[in-house]
Image 1 (cartoon, rainbow, N blue to C red):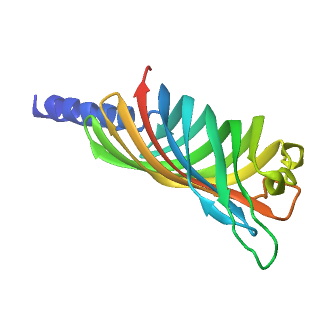
Image 2: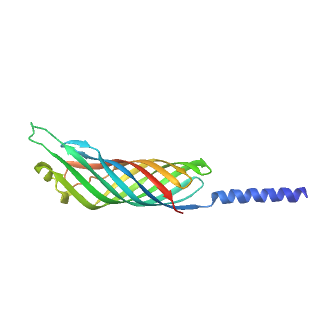
Image 3: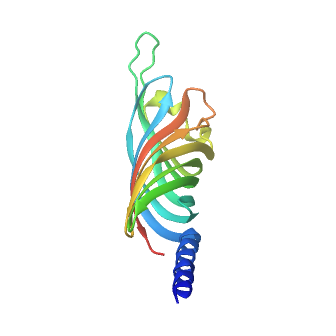
Length: 198
C-alpha cells in the first residue's frame, strides 16, 4: 500500500511539473501614450505627445516568452531654433502615423496572477502618413524626404495583474528617419495599458 501511495504522489508531482513547462499563449489589446523626440542638428528638439493602439500576442514557457505586436502609433517631433548668426530661424512640427511591428524576447517572474516582465527586441515602423507644419525654413525639410520605413530597438519592463498588463518601454532609433542629414533618429518613451482576451 505504501508503494502504491508513493508511486501515486510521484506521478502527481511529475504531472504538475510537466504542466508547468507547457507552452502558454496569450492574445491581447493595448493602448497608450508615446513621448517622442526627433534628433536634429539645426534646432532644439522637443517632445511630442502621441498615441499607440493595437494587438499583441505572447508565446512562452519556463519563464521566457516571445511577444510580437502590431499597433498604430503617432510619433514625430517639434523644433525651435533662433540662430541669428547663421541666419536660421526654424519652428515647426513633424507628425508621423506609423504601423509598428516589434518582436520582443522576454522573461517573467511572479506567482499566481501577478508577473513582472522584462523584454527587448527590434521594431520596424511603416510610415502611413507624414504631416509637416512650420515656417519657410522648416519647409526645406519637406515630408517627401522622410523614409517610409525605419528600424528601432525597444527595451523595457511590464507588470501583469490577472488579465491587465502595464508596460513601460524606451525605443531607440537605429536608422535616420529622413534622407536629409539635418534630421536624424526617432526616440521615444512608451507607456501602455493592455488587456488579455485569450
